[in-house]
Image (cartoon, rainbow, N blue to C red; front, side, top):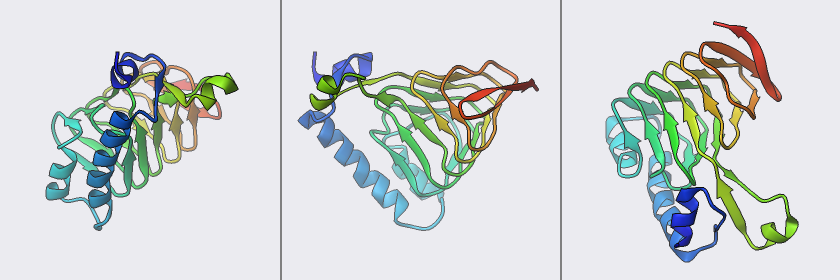
Length: 181
């Protein structure tokens, strides 16, 4: 398997692989062009559609950062406020009618606990899934492998390290159940 195939399969892979570095650089060129001008326009959105899989309308306020872009799947009517970061070494699925506050970060990439494996520049990805009608408050970080259920709300400043069921309010560090919606 190539390093990219390992990455997409959720196996350990070498993040310094020349092909992966080339793909990240190509993505950064599009991302940098998007981020250099003020505000979101449909024309700027078309640039992002060269990478992102978009199933409807969306609005992302710059700056917006990602690794590849090609592993991000967005539903209809997605909004991300300023400073969104999505590390998409594997699939990130975002449902319909989802809103992100400023500085929301989604991390699919993680590293081995073993220092020896980290020195080998090995990394692994775990997918993130966000359901429909979800609101994620500003400054929230979502960890690798997390699923957030439909109609849920994540309070601002949360660190989401485990799955969130549908119709729930979660908050805190680490994020925990606060109440049913």
